[in-house]
Length: 270
Image (cartoon, rainbow, N blue to C red; front, top):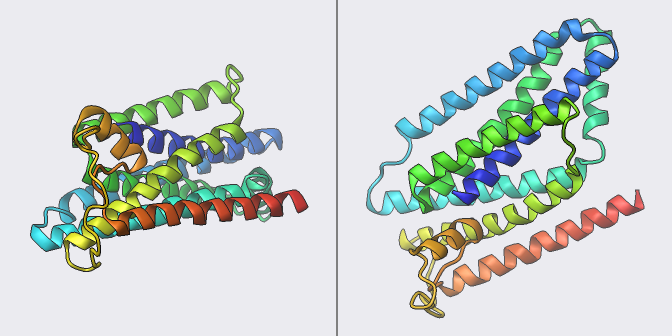
């Protein structure tokens, strides 16, 4: 439940910030008559996300044996890749998101191309929605469906309420610190997806096992218990990991730490 709440909360808040920046700019420049195009883009982005969720639910999954393990491994690795891209993109663009959106909105208004505002909102909302669906699909592989759905719904509701309070001026949150904290949690989640994804590919016979169990801590903290299950969903905990899972988990964290440091150094130089 925790991972689903964090994912949907962050993704919904990101989408809300994009929409809020566009609407605020239109209001500031006295072009709010074009605000309907932004809302049409929001609705279209939500609809395409719902359609994709339906496709995932109806036509993907439900495999047996090796096919199921292969599918789950691919979904986990795909979700980890998207989370990594999302985090690095946000780190690289966080100082320029508002400026870039406003410049694009200004260009569309000056060229009397209001439909461009529709696509700005549509792409922003649809991107966050599609990412959310893939992330939740990966989380469903490891956790109970009811908990994932309830956590995901709660995250969306909290993000929407907080966004409204922010744009109305009733609440302020340090967005830089917020995205840094959620990025750290998502990095641990992605590291777990990498390790568990490779585990599924090992089960499918695609990736060699080498050493099956380096240690076994399930008698101390069982990954199928309440606390162990929470750690498994949030941080990729495995009570009896293989050597490939350990190496992949640590290597992923080292890679992300290096990229994070490089982006931070580049930002300071700029």
